Image (cartoon, rainbow, N blue to C red; front, side, top):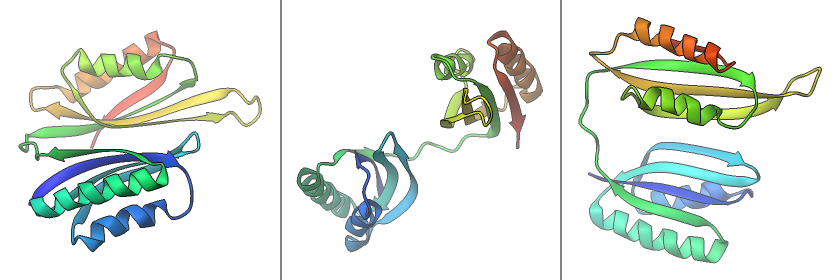
Length: 172
């Protein structure tokens, strides 16, 4: 089985998920993994699709046509599965008053230690009584067998304290 990752974005409207998934199912392909959300009025889709090479080629052509007709933008990329590694998944949660640079600082913390971020989600909401923008971040990182999770969690909490972030890191 071959795989491809598709990223699609366009103005949010009813029916987009149906249109995209219909292309996939008509070609007897399978959506193995996906993330879909609305960001600033734009509907964004990331999906991993698997099936025969020729059918993925056809999906790319049909996606090109759909996007040209509907004003969607997309990226279609063939992919390969990474070899499975022994790793421990850890989840981090950070809450702070919103300000520029939070994601960059947190990504830098993990990157400087050679730790891969598998998934990262953020959102900003307003505090109930004051209306202050509150930034929420959740992420999952992959720790190698050589990484001490407790030591990393302590370092992450110290890092968060230094940057006025309320953050924790926990292993599964």
